[in-house]
Length: 466
Image 1 (cartoon, helix red, strand yellow):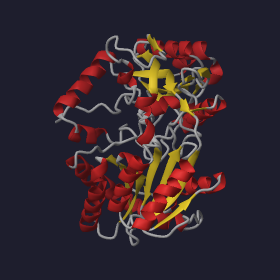
Image 2 (cartoon, one colour):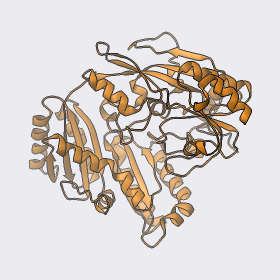
Image 3 (tube, rainbow, N blue to C red):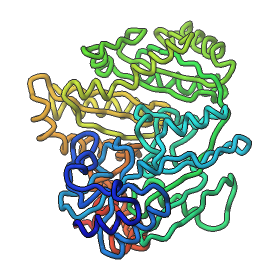
Image 4 (cartoon, rainbow, N blue to C red):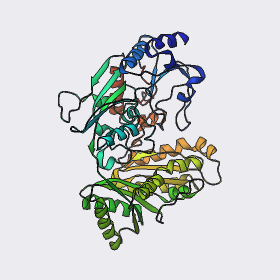
């Protein structure tokens, strides 16, 4: 171990090669589900340094675990317990490399936080639209590696849709460098897409060129509706009536609202009701447009009540309420988390079927339902019955509950993983729900680009079926 650390220090500097207790914060995931032990933690500061580290590891058959902002939910950036894997932290690769307001592009290193990329765009009166609660700490490389979604997919798409070019260090240390700013390029395979969503199993993203958009004012509204079906109907009407200016359409269910209201958070939305929405539109005319469209919906009985944010303080309170749901679940003892997607039109039926399934098989559980209704991504998280300790419930029931929820989503033409990746947590689910042809193709791509299996081994790639 000491020899490898000494050798790697030649490339990145001794302060950036960690061992022993200094590795601790890099050896577990954000949710505390996965714990490992690293041979060392290496923190390269440039792509050249990263390439030297990967080359050394490849030459010495040392497995590598790329790690970003430590916000993942599926164990995709945690080393195993063997003590033989090197964690490659990208936290020092955090520079804004270029910003072109005319072309509406920004080029950033993989370790830059999402918030830093957003702020750089705003400094040029532009918008980088990827947004999520963890944006102050999650990193761009991790966002691309998991194809992160977030709060504005309805309008702008996922991380995959926002990437124009990548710089990637391959499994043998070679650098695939195509930080292209082109919007149109049909010169062969779109190779960057191999690495987006691959969770570091094919190579390590070191920099990315991203799309920017005009910076427009945004207006938020909190809406109470009578049902999820009414919410879906409102979504369709808002998209049509606002000429698709809708950027976010978030659903918050009854259990989520109750958890938010409990101490110490004590967050109460501006309206009552069991089914509530946070909607947002972009544009100079968004306030008047939302007032007109939602006012008409209120008069028609399509919605129960509406509050429009008239200043940034009101808007921030709305978003803080929505984004505090994961913290509220954690304070309640944790939950069995699900990150599913179904066709947008099938969301009401999925929620109804899932509630019935859970109520029949696990009486007394609470389903905390919230998420990105506008793009079909539902977080249906299951909390323990009141008479069962959360730790006992999670330890004994999580696997069976997730299998049932994932199966239901896939039966409805959906996915068991919408925006949080696969990692270790859902690797077996991928083997179950992806087609044999898809699984075989993934293994063939992995074999072609990482024949010795050194890049983030044990993550994402489905194993051979027994």
